[in-house]
Amino acid sequence: MKFIIFLVLPLLFLSSSVSSDTYIGKWEITGGSVIEIYKDGDYFFGKINKRAKRPLSNLNGLDNKNPQKELQGRVLLGMNILENLSYKDGVLSGGTIYNADSGKSYIVKVWINSDDTDICYIRAYKSLLFKTFEARRVN
Image 1 (cartoon, rainbow, N blue to C red):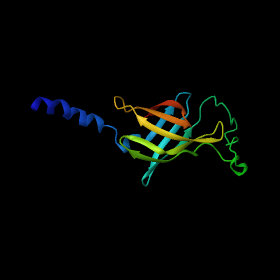
Image 2 (cartoon, rainbow, N blue to C red):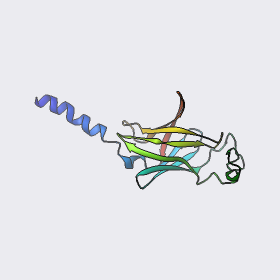
Image 3 (spheres, one colour):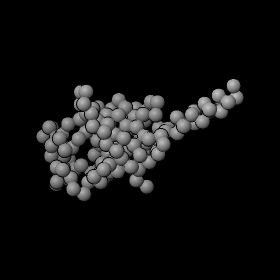
């Protein structure tokens, strides 16, 4: 019995290594863009902190692809692209991610690698399809 307790006890500490506060900070996505994740009330948000060195579109730094004409002139830096995420069981989900390259929003899930809390994954869903991005914590 004592042997089983010694095996299970470390697993409890491993699963709790990713708290909601672990998500807060700046994360660099492959390509050079940096998203700053922050908490406001019970929800998490992410804003563009730095753009990629070679962006795919919106070269003038504005939200040109937005389907709402009145928003096409807003500046991308500082704009929220992750919205209304909730923390549950070590994962942020239930919100959306905005893709400024296409002007579309998608359901999103964000989770942190429990083995290395300086790596997180951002998965955008479109129906049954999804795309996952890896991000590294910026110190």
